[in-house]
Length: 414
Ligand code: HAM
Image (tube, rainbow, N blue to C red):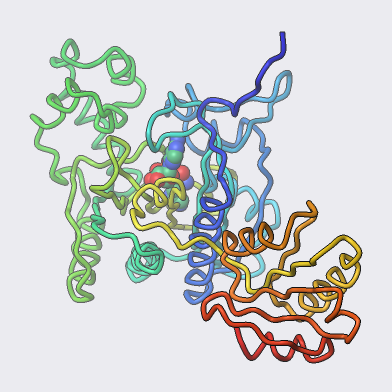
């Protein structure tokens, strides 16, 4: 029996209109990253499995359940970009070349999650990472960059949530506190969290299940674990954001689902999305570089989910149109038409042609569908005189134009 193939569950095809929106979102983001002094890097989709096991964390959902492994090899489809950027940074000894680096990247990521609205198995990140400084001004820059990208794209009704996990020692203290506080509530947690409680209680705080949320909400989490340095630098960051007029909500229950985070963590959510409401997220990962075998260098970054951004944009982009459609009255004029098309395209004038030998009426219909502003009509009589008709579709008027003057005339009319 003949099989009809369809796209793999959790992946999405972008039709021309969606692809146009996708490209515009990427272009806007790249433009803003450059304005902020970030440099683009393009890294492979395949990475060693061990990089994420060590970098993202053995007990995280990503590593436990979601990585797509290449059969028989210790290679996976990358689930995220941060560990990968640090792999690139260390592999190329970039810390020896300069003590501060800023990168951005855009590309597909893969996670074997249960697909639902806004949760895919192949999705796209636009991410930025700044390596080499622990300044709260860099935290603020990251948050502003993230918000500016969303503003330039036209995302509305988003909310910035912010928290701090504190330094590695604070995280340890917090983990110990959670273990103790949750010990006698274990029976009320979901099966996954009962297992997480021993190995990584922070993940319990992150769990979205109602029963776990209830338990976590009953704890008083507000920053009791922070040392005085982390506490005061977080306060300084919040007052810097206040002075810059950046609205945020302090969310002590937000710990993020990846183990590398320390200190500042943030998430931007949108009311226009359903359960999967984070458009983007990030934070500091001051210990990751050391943990992956490098020197003790602090860093911070974020990644935006492009598909989720697209879901929030209710007013889609206008369909892309062409400037000129070239219509030949019959087959014998194709050659002339094809040459005219070549001249127009060489001058970067978007133009199209019909290869299906349809009547002039049908060709004009196609021109209209493609949104052409002008139509070049090539008829036998005019062609003999070295002329064509140039029809303005909006004004519904046409004039006879010499072929040698055509490009100039078109440029004046578009
Ligand atoms: P993340 O929170 O796992 O962080 O992903 C960032 C964003 O990617 C999310 O806020 C969401 O918009 C989108 N996203 C994540 N998973 C999916 C999915 N299955 N389907 C569709 N969209 C998804 C990171 O990956 C970190 N590397 C961010 C970072 C960079 N932190 C520091 N630097």
